[in-house]
Amino acid sequence: MTIAAGSNRSSRIAGFHKLSPRERLDLVAGFAGLDDAQVTHLANMGNLDPVLADKLIENVIGTMNIPVGVATNMKIDGEDVLIPMATEESSVVAAVCNAAKQNYETGFFTSVSGNLMIAQVQAVDVADPAGARIRILEKRDDIKAACDACDPVLVSLGGGFRDVEVRLLDTPSGTMVVTHLIVDTRDAMGANAVNTMAEKLAPAIAAWSGGRVYLRILSNLADRRLARARAVWKASDIGGEAVRDGMISAYEFAAADPYRAATHNKGIMNGISAVVLATGNDTRAVEAGAHAFAARSGRYTSLTTYEVDKDGNLSASIELPLAVGLIGGATKVHPTARACLAILGVTTAERLARIIAAVGLAQNFSALKALATTGIQKGHMALHAQNIAMMAGAVGEEIDRVARLLVERASVRMDVAQKALEEVRGG
Ligand code: MEV
Image (cartoon, rainbow, N blue to C red):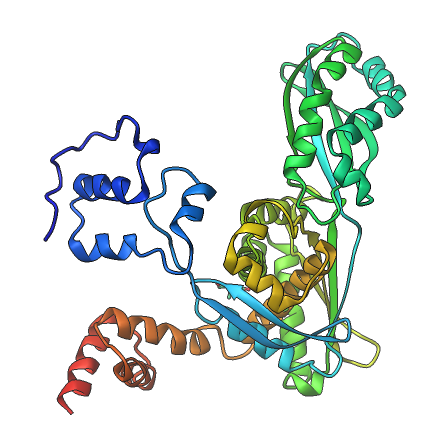
């Protein structure tokens, strides 16, 4: 049965947030005219407890299941690691497996710059910005005491306030005095910790600066929390010097051109966001930080570098902000995130960030290798063909058979899939 759409087409639904997920779903079904199958589908929350789902965000009516795949072959800092990746995009998991297979002997080496997060406090209408900057810096000890008092648990774990910086920003409405609180958030992503500190300090900063405080919020450009990874692929293992040189040319294209760099970095984030999501971390925070970091010189560029090393092999590296944690947000409460963290076997946020950086590099290696050789479509289409086969109605064993026909015919299209399905069913 389809619930007729239009019985109530108003988006103003009083008390919507107070309803149960099922009650909300019924209202939405009425609004949108969802059929029974769609309602049953949305009501099935899979392996996420509806009570928990309803606590994680507001106005819940269902869940969105994304496949979790595991990338194999990764060796990171001498340790074999299985990587859970949550993504809707085919080829992403396979790309990491393939890249890691080609340098399994040596693997990836990683490091981090620390766990420091930055919170910003914006003061405006300051009569003497230069003087205000010095007055705020004079208060370092008071600032440290106030920040650390906000989070004694963090301090007991070795974290807490580390430094204060004050920047003067010229804007159309005058010079802003922007105070940066630099805080070691240890194994937390740290947004809550530093936002609390910024809000707590705001009145004092207003008084010291003689201005008015507006924004008090973390910066997602977490450039004091950089993760790095490097790896070498032997030229002989990747198809020879011509492949190596094609990949370096692909990197140089991204380094020189923001149009290409956006796509190059998107590919890197295919891997990074998949692990960030699988572990219940904030994909948008990491993505914002990565892209802002890629533009730090004033021109948007590649997050990775590729060179020929002294032995003629391909030497690659990546560096980017990676604000991820093991506590707080969904990481601790989402059972899938907890299970994924258990697969990774990580006990610190630093290790998680290091693994994620290595995954980003592996992802990028595979994309550049495919692009510099056969092109991306060959491998991509084999997997994409399965999606098209399913969209055409193939089920069970039909999916692989139809997908194979599409690849053989070099035509991964819906109409071709429908015809292929008829053939498979007919024969
Ligand atoms: C597709 O999701 C990602 C690529 O476009 C990345 C790249 O071009 O480097 C293949």
